[in-house]
Length: 171
Image 1: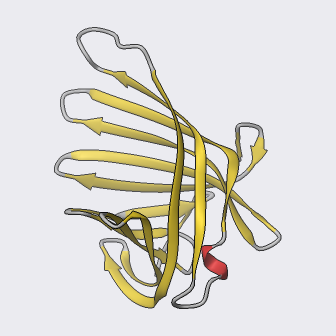
Image 2: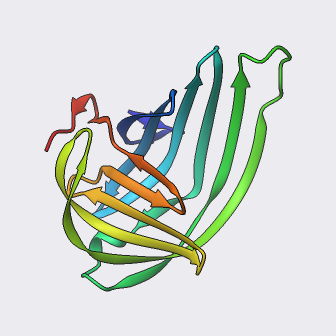
């Protein structure tokens, strides 16, 4: 697979929350043991035919160093790029919305623990991402690199199913 002209692995995730179905395609590769993210495509389908498609291109590609950490260690991260969102299914056509971003946050590896989601029970690395004291995202990432669960404030996302280059992710 390629994304923006770069050879990439494609990871597909599907979630359904309160009748809203999301399909997420993440594009990344491995550069000498470092996970490098190029971007993503997200499609959200809402009952009644409303649909959004969001394409995120990271520039530069994000070099994710969290898998090099030992429990309790942290690193400072910056993720920059552009997001283009298109909405279809509205009575009146809307132009695509483009947003540039430059997010800075601290990533801490908490440890490895089992996490149970609808897709099964997996061993996962628990990370805390802090943009500031009130904005903390906790993520459980499987040892296969797949995001299993994410919590932020009062919201939670869990993995229903996933595939990597067309092969299903299983415990």
